[in-house]
Length: 75
Image (cartoon, rainbow, N blue to C red):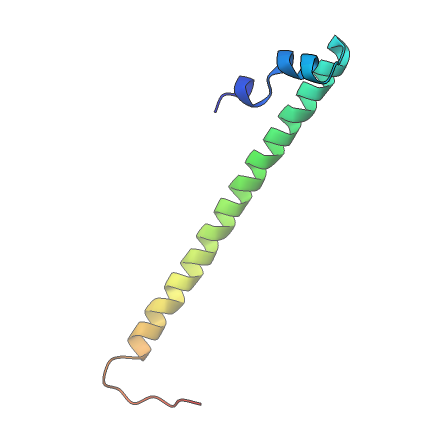
């Protein structure tokens, strides 16, 4: 979504009764928050990709180790 829709400056200024300087600071803080959320999302995406690769690797190992019809020890 475009930043203008996420951090609109005019309605913030009117709704919170801010002067122009305060409105700019409020908008800058919103943009900073938006950038932090974007970086956090990218980090979480990378983390999930690594986790999925790990799970897939071990799943292939377990599928080769345990096959239908083979006896297994159950505790």
